[in-house]
Image (cartoon, rainbow over all chains, first blue to last red):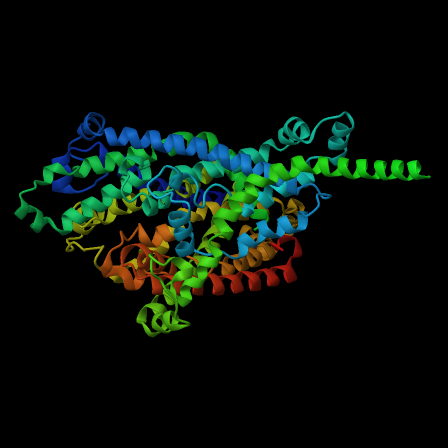
Length: 298
Length: 316
């Protein structure tokens, strides 16, 4: 049945997609291979896919001296778990309430949610509110609260899911049976909304794990609260600073040995990206579904 | 009579109360989320007035001296206002075009592919979307680092070319940033187009094939025209966001290098630097308000257009 034209297309498509897939993953290979390369080899030959000499020194270094790495891992994990839980809780509850067509004041609440998608104050006023009114600078709250916990788009997405996929008759039957609103929500609406809850939870979890901005802006002194991303960011900046001012440093008698070596840097980035790489095969299916769900509307 | 009146009032009252009681749990449920929006999205809004003031941390937002449009006058008198507006808009336009073309191209290849491996291709191409810009900056650094980078040490050496100080030469950065952005987001955009293509009626293709249409003709004459509404819609929504940029892409990936500012500075990085690096609150708040207002107008305009073309896809 396959024509010559069809076969030629398939071959071409395979070639193009193989090239694109390789482009997508090659940078990760360079990162990981570099982290397993001997430091002197790196200094002589640079980051390479085919190192002359392999070494696990970088990882030994991290896990011996790098308490900060494990510590920041702990912060990132705690932040992601707590943040995702809270994000899901407040988003789901608000979306459920807004899905009730007869709720008095619903239109006003909907507008208030919706308006946040159109207009926002931006960085400067937000920063002032969080630092001057709530004083969350240099606290764990500054990683958790600003920006990430909820967004109007997810609320609207979930609200329309509740409206369209949870049949009103089932809810009515529950009320007639004497279920309270909380029972109706927890026992009927929530289980039916599992797909959207999973999707938004996944997006929130990734956003929390990947966020570096909050820590970068608000954690000016408490480096002990750094997430993995913040630690990596700080390390990249330190190296930059040191290499730019290397003449100055030599004067001061500070050896370059005191900063993480060329391979350690890549090993830390590898350790930072590892959770995503490990989880990815398991979550990518629901992630793709989630993008489709959100992409259809917006 | 009196008792009867009381009774009916009582019933009324009871049903009224019952109704109100029924809604209390719903308001309780909505409360945490609305409180969050109030704190995170609404409380900052009055602070926008700062753009018209000479900020003094001691006096606070409202105690600071009112200076009218002076901050804006200064901002637009500088070269910066032009550069950040140009960079933000031009990069976005290039991103929209490149992303749309690449995403559709990949989506068509994936949709037409018969082999099961296409799932694997799609997953791999989507992977970069999942990682943070900090990690991206490390990946880019692996290639571009002047001392240790793969380009300088392997590729350029192989051609006998002199090493390039990538983080100092601004002429390369428009290409680097477009490449990195495409690399990171192509998988995401492609998923949306792929879902649309897969929803098309396959019988059109079958009858076209029977009529002797080649694969290329089918793509050009069937797939692309059918994708048009989706393309228009997604493009318009992206146009609505044209005054906003991905802070991480323009700040982390070029590693905040001063030598590159003229090609990497966008409104978002400018506002950030004004607020937290140079302490130039006046310029920063003026640029922030400028972004909020123009951004708002663009989002509204784009949505009105989307609503005209495809009411179901409009945000409102």
